Length: 157
Image 1: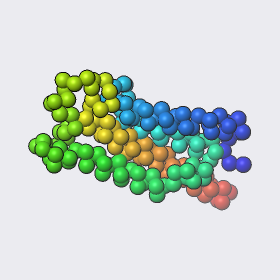
Image 2: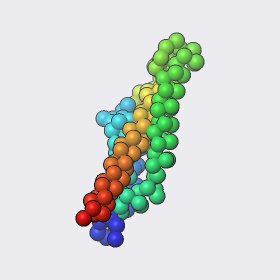
Image 3: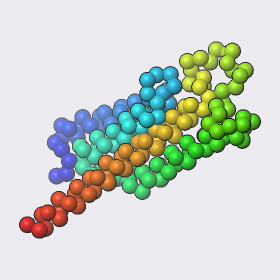
């Protein structure tokens, strides 16, 4: 039997989606609340790490494989670079220019809303995707090496 007891599996199957949704919330609304891309990405990775600890590495790889994790990692990096470079192409002359937050919006009642920050939520989403995929990939690779090294020790004995 892989994984932990039935109690741990039941509880983790109940809370995995809540943790995932909380990570998305922290990532998207990071410009309004404490949090942001890094904290949200860590929480997103923790939802998959919880699955790996409760059900075993194979179950977690069925939900989010190493190949898909690597692709999400690359997409997060490319999305972050695209947000940074878009300032050159949309009228503003600069790298990481907040081109979505225009001066005419500053006087309107958009403060403390999702659209009030311009490109910052987009950057937070890209960072959250990059951090979440990278952290889960690190834990997944470390678990593969741990399983391989423990299997090698058993064969020698």
